[in-house]
Length: 111
Length: 110
Image 1 (cartoon, chains in turn purple, red):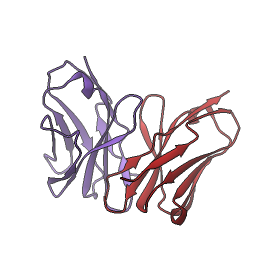
Image 2 (cartoon, helix red, strand yellow):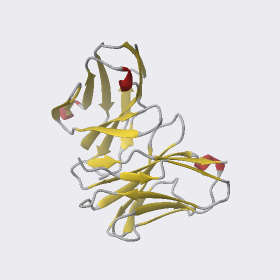
Image 3 (cartoon, chains in turn yellow, orange):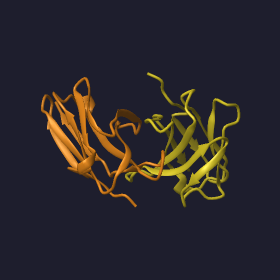
Image 4 (cartoon, chains in turn brown, yellow):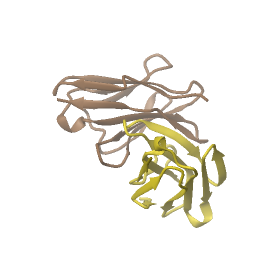
């Protein structure tokens, strides 16, 4: 069964550094998403991406965050200047109105 | 927004036992999915089940969309079933923007 692949599985970064989380969605999917889960909390929506632009974003997704599909296969989430409170699991998902597949996640630890 | 409630919040099972997890939601949905989050935090896709019943090995799920609930059944539980089980719904007006429940923490003891 096709999978959404996320790399790295765990990333440690220093506060203030830029970090890029990478995802390879399922090849024939058209919609792409990032979600976040702070430790002990619910999984929450960050942003959706369709046709090379953001279609919707949550209040969490401020100017520190950006997304890109640089080469037609990867889908990235960039955090420009990480804060301690950005420490969380980040999940990528892809789909097309018929079910969505989530990646296993990247654990981001900001120290 | 749509409310998603999962019950019970915690469940302790002895290996080999069966269990039922429930997900109630407050409004009509396009889609409902179940996930298992293992102790390392990884999310595992279990079922895409907007309605009806599906089975995958020892796991099965049923969604009754008209009554706004879904059930996840775990049969003959194993220690590897431990983790958090999440239900997530896609509201009727928000394609792909899932609202997750708080999860059911399952611990399976040998």
